[in-house]
Image (cartoon, rainbow, N blue to C red):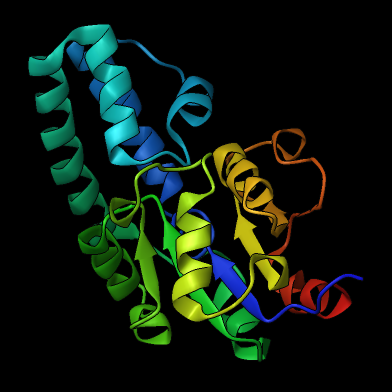
Length: 216
């Protein structure tokens, strides 16, 4: 028997705040400057949904530790500046949150500092304050299930009663590995076919999220 949904776990970047486009733009610029030319599609495939540590590991393998350190420092500064001048919630997200009556939390590959900044800039931090979880709190980031299992444990809900709202391939893979259902948001940068899989419903309009949750 399928358990009723008791908890909605939201990713942050690309699901709550429209920050993935900013991140991709900054990563492409840094790659061109520091010696690893990357297209936007390559950045999405390699970096989106992964922790800062996992991204830094990739850059280290390609360019060495010194350049990876410069890359990470520059990314943090450039991303923060871009967020301050142009970040918005994902289209339709605030309206969807107003309709959702189930308990909610956030589980993101980003750091707590980053989420305080991005969610704060968009007026969303107060909606989730005290229920925000970061990959820095677990041993392995997405696509491992650790973060989602940790969030469910902290919220006191069984994994089978959780649904994860994600916009990246590592994110939906992590949800499945955790034994949770997934809603793959394909209205951002990741193509729908990269989100498809078992126990996953792919959707394109965040305004449809409340209805999808009621139907699960």
